[in-house]
Amino acid sequence: MKCFSPKTTALQWIGLSLLSLLILPACSVNPVTGKNELSWVTEDWERKTGEQYYPVQQQIGGGKYQIDPDLTLYVRSVGKKLALYSTRSYLPYDFVVLNDSTPNAWALPGGKIAVHRGLLVELDDEAELAAVLAHEIVHADARHTAQSQEVGSLLSVGQLAATVLLSNAGIDSQAAQQGIAYGGLYGQTHYSRSRELEADFYGMQYMSKAGYNPRAAVNLQETFVALSQGRRSDLFSSLFASHPPSQARVAANQQTAYALPNRGDRGKARYQKEIAALMRRKPAYDYADEAKKKIAKEDYTQAILLADKAIKIEPKEGLFYEIKGIAQSKLNRSSNALKSFDTAVALTPGYFAPILRRGVLRFDLKSYRAARQDFEASLKLAPTQIAYVKLGEIAEEKNNCGAAMQYYQQAAKAGGKNQQQLKQKLLALQTTCQP
Image (cartoon, rainbow, N blue to C red; front, side, top):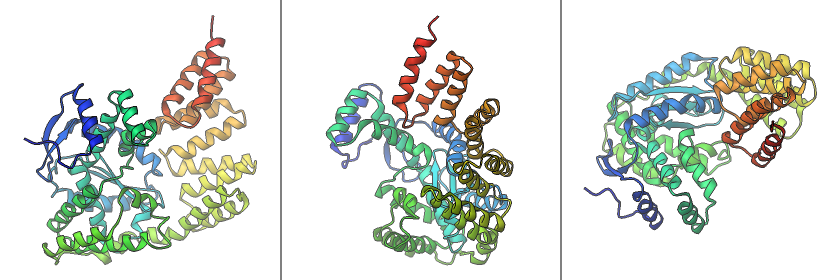
């Protein structure tokens, strides 16, 4: 049984040789393609990894699109219909819509799949949605997302050897290890050309079996190629980074479509009906996105005006109040900002960002007890360095240096840009905490 491809690069061969000194790799068959491959993870690992990181990635991706739960139910129904025809249809597939304007979609190991609302407004019909979901299903079904973690494991084995290899390749070792080891877990895997073609090919098979016209996958790639070359390419940068479009993919999809029945459903009227409420809110989200840009340019007054325009269109969207609160806090309108954050928290229960922002504002106002409650609540939803740091600072204010050290240690583990400052804090506290 051959597990190694003749196209394996010299760097991969060296890395595989290093890894083989420590563990015995296992041969496995790709469940979708039937090809023999190396594997260091089990299906149980896939399931557990997906379950572990799915909630956190949803938080990072803007949180669930709570204002319209029926939209997620609709997307989930299309996804479940397709998943029935996947090779591993028994995986615990789940589908969610995230509250993010960025057109994107991603999959985690074990079949956890998300679509941003920003992508839904760019699709023409249900068949194009099916093309997106089927593509992501294949990434999970064929273990593409899991394999990206195997590469991360490879790079983390034998740190000195890995550092030498990556340095010789002109890559910063720490950044590369972190990016490969965790990128896939957070839905940002950059798939290879072969993996993308594989996901297109088998995804179109799933579409056809589920009753969708596979030509939709061709149309979708044609649209993405045009967008990648046009003025809107920046908007799609995240999607194109992980799923690069190309004329080669269009040609491959056309060839696949010719071999499949093209009489399937496109479901345009049904799709337009399901996203009608989202389309009515789109102008509000456009205002909110412009407000974010104004905040980045420190034009906080204009950001508030834009947020108010968004709120006028959709007063039940917590994101708009969160944006308004950020701008108000920058203008030292603390009382107004707290009210905005309170509303955002109430409208988006279970979403960490407005809770964390309110905690930071309360900390700045020296309302340490309330701030601590917010930081602890936000950490239950998503671990962030800033929450641990602020909890450490609150502990220092109370002269509880032991607790402060624990929080700063957690902050260091969480990663971020302030590692040197955290080391200095910890060194200072080690002296202070001496009996």
